Amino acid sequence: MANPMPARAADQSGTATSDAIVEVRDICKRYGDIEALRGINLEFERGKLTTLLGPSGCGKTTLLKIIAGLVPATSGQIRINGKVVTGPGPERAFVFQDFALMPWATVLRNVGFGLELKGVPQAERHRIAKHYIGEVGLSGFEEKYPHELSGGMRQRVGIARAFSVNADVLLLDEPFSAVDEQNRRKFQEDLLQLVEKERKTFLFVTHSIEEAVYVSDRIVLLSPRPGRVSQIIEPNIDRSAAPDVIRRDKGYLDVVEEIWQGLRQYAE
Amino acid sequence: MHMAATPHKVSATGGAGSGSSTIVETLAEFARRRKSFWVVVSLATLFTAWEIAGRVPISFAFPTFLETLAALIEMALDGTLLPAYAITFQPLVIGVAVSAVLGIGLGIAMGLSDKAEWLLAPVFIVLQAAPMAALVPLVTFVYGIGLVAKTLAVIMLALPVIVLNSYKAVRHVNPSLVDMCRSFQGTRLQQISKIIIPDATPVLFAGLRLGIAAGFIGVMLAELLITPTGIGDLITYHRSIANYAHMYAAVASIIAVSTITLAALQYIEVRFLRPEKRRK
Image (cartoon, rainbow over all chains, first blue to last red; front, side):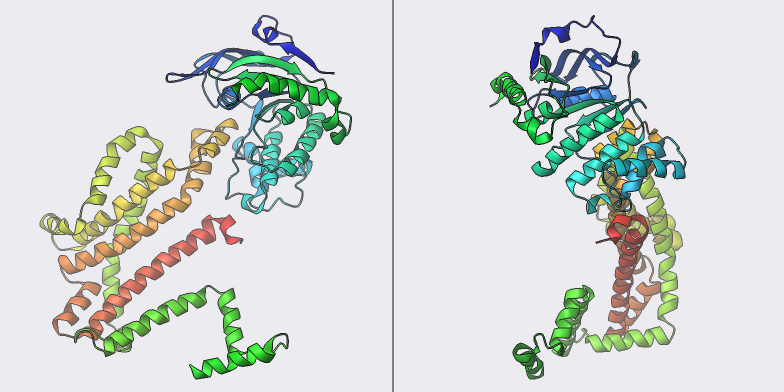
């Protein structure tokens, strides 16, 4: 079931498939003397969920923020739909690890904030925001403030906000790390349904191996100091099965084990 | 003491569940529900201690609370208190208004721009550390003894506090919210108006409250050190004729006005600018 591939494929930047929506070309990032990322070459296929996985310090969040245009790269290029980008753009939406919700605004205004910045009229943005609040399962919470919601519900608001702007690519930076374990599992299941339904490209950063294997079409393993691509794995898990069946599947467990074997050398 | 103990015993033996509420129970329930109960207890304790200290007496120049209260009512009724406030408020209101507008403006500019920070921060850090009362006589040499000098005294005390707090408020804005605004392609102006200023509001207002408190200090320094006018005149005059109850009444009234002003500002902030705070 599992079909792990060596990292070699990722280094051959010339083999661009026509359907790569995000292309990462020779990205390097230095913070003073510290080399955070070295020579990253990756392609992200349209409509797939790709996970960036690695131990802390491997630069996975930095890479995601470079793709988002929030952090400038020291060298290299990011191309979205074939065009080089240098800053944030409407084709990408970001989901933050700490939710980044405005505490003074209601759920409705938070979800519609991306549209508000673009000058979408209030009635229109409320209509869209309400639709996505329903999609993430928060109907009835429109007039609540973030501090009245649990961590999991707050991140649902963050995801609804990212969906509202109708971007092609969703960039999720450890979206569930501040959510407790039970809610995290429910969340992962809901996310898979949204991926199925919304037909968008997802780039997902996590440090949880199980989470990566459970949700991803493709897993990019990064190694630390400096951050490099060490391996690319395609779990090939049949997601039509029930969640508890997937979590007990031999193939699923094998991939988890394999990734752990690859990463254990970096554990302290 | 004995009176209070009796109903308490009743409630302990047969009061539970019967629905009959005694004075103690009602009071306990009221205290649980309303924070204002403890405010009243706190003030009552202070005033009782004052009354006792006045009756001992700890000094012939220290009036009791009730004498002071009587003097305050007398001054309020005979028309000396209100005109005095009308005079004191002129430099205070002008000075605080100028400090608020200028202070928040400069503070935000310093928070947003490194150059503005390097240019202005050292000046205001020195000004905040300086004992301003020592500089008030200098103001008199330059600007005389009129409204300008007194307004300047207020500004000298209020402005540095407001500037430095506004600056800190902007610097401590959640960087993740700013990133969020950028990721949705918010312009710099949208970033400032929709994220930075709203997120800085609590600290901006904390600075404003400190600034207004400093402004009250400034106006009293001006009225006591430059020329006695307004409330400063009332204090000086009644001290000179050994009318201590009236002197204390003037002092207590300015403390009360200052406290109420700060409480009102906090109310306005929560009521109009922090909608999420209104819900518990």
